[in-house]
Length: 115
Length: 114
Image 1 (cartoon, rainbow over the protein chains, first blue to last red):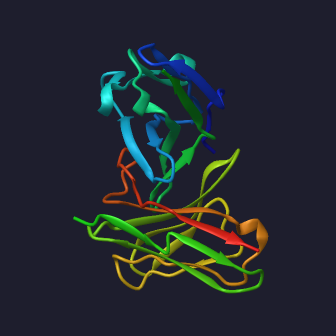
Image 2: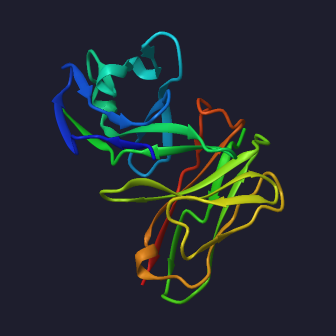
């Protein structure tokens, strides 16, 4: 069965600083990988996804992620964080199980941005 | 474009009562999902549906019942609520079954069981 680990529960960065959120996955086949963001009291919004091709994926809001098969990682990055990026970030791996594609989520990383 | 909506947004109930959480999507997506979100667990899949009248269990289905008589609706019922079912519940939908397909999430229902 697939699994996702987000080793950082909480990260604090200064506005304007760079950001990297870590994600490690376990899956036997080629993974489909996602990053979602959840603002307080809101649902989840897709930031970006990887399913094939270029291992560096660009997303919305200036985020990017790099798929590294050798390290089973899919880390999320942003060169300069804005105060509005404060939210919770979830990494997920998708797997087709015969009837539907199901997502397995990590436990999330809460990002705090200081001014 | 309403997208995917959930109702109610907040619900307080008592142990042993039946509660139904509603989910409605306007995209005619075939696939719909119910998750619960708890601190330290992220989101866990409760049930999912590949089409009308086709449902299947996810990771944590015990204590929940689903139905899908119409493509656009996917209600989740707690037949006899327990305190351990206090959580935030999210509904999601996707258009295809491909592993790369995006799931779109509703705003969530915060359920408190006293």
